[in-house]
Image (tube, rainbow, N blue to C red; front, side, top):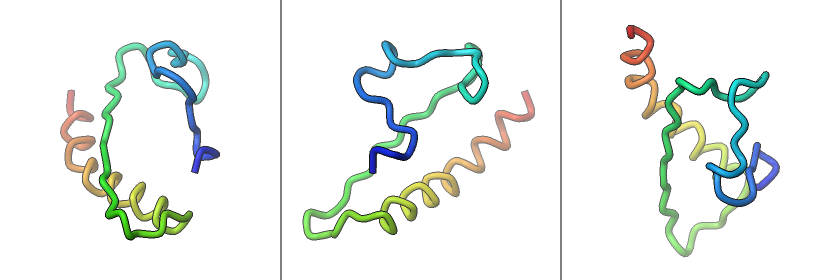
Length: 68
């Protein structure tokens, strides 16, 4: 699913801050690991579901950071 804003390589070496569409240097970046069962078929639908569940999970934290 690399077409979804993929960054090949090490993030610290690839990340450009303070540009349009990219994080600011004082933004928080949160990394989420998702483990998929070996028998699961990895496809576009599953990828979107993972993105959606990650977003739902992070909403409570996003709201608390907005108050800073």
